[in-house]
Image (tube, rainbow, N blue to C red; front, side, top):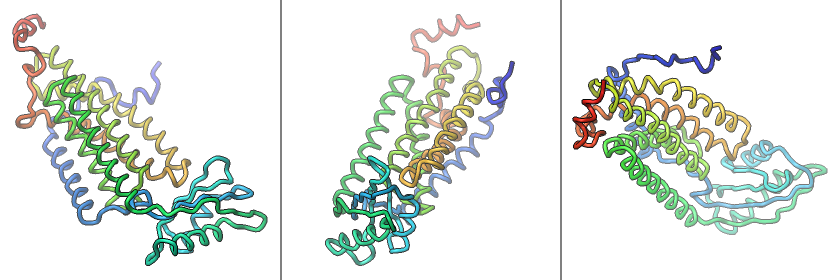
Length: 321
């Protein structure tokens, strides 16, 4: 018996992706350069994690809706307030960027007053148990560590894929993954949405998801190169079609999970969920339309000789039907 979601795409699909490779690579390159341009000209709307500001803990007698607290703080001049609960539901952790022209003790005092005003209601007393100013130097250190993490992941992927497959596959996979990361980061530059540590975590997870999807396709490419008597374009095309159903279904299920996180995870997780949703879409498209087409271009063009030991190549081919 066939189950509809699992047969949404036929297993014997025969779409000619290689015929569209120049268009798909050109579109991917244009989107990537637009993202780079947006990051260079508009920059990011860095959150408190990177810019510094006030960190306030408040204890309430009874829980209070977080959206209501954010709205009151926004009305008092703190538009990008980050409000979340910790411990029990009546304990709040609030991060505020200083209002324009304020800094140091003045900013700390006004932030405490604004929070007290926002969380105090009739019959619900609020106490400020912690009020600290986080300097921008801490934010710079976090940004630097985030960059180190990005470089470490890229180098690790490069070494792993080169060891598992062949250096051409490694280069193609890294180019594809960096494309996905740049496009997702560029979206935050274009949209002006806050860029905080949760967004950075989401982007790093996008790298893992993208490289996993690409490796699945590349693994099938390697198998088909060793079993099929056909030109590289035909082998690559066949490999994409064979993994297409798996790729789409896996991406769809992952997207639904992250969509639930975006809708119900609260404001503190929305940035991470947003980056992951966009990353799943871009990563799925790039693994289909970019990763394999790169293996047909220039010095990255892959051949059967790249995947079979040269000393055994002729004997292995002779045994093939």
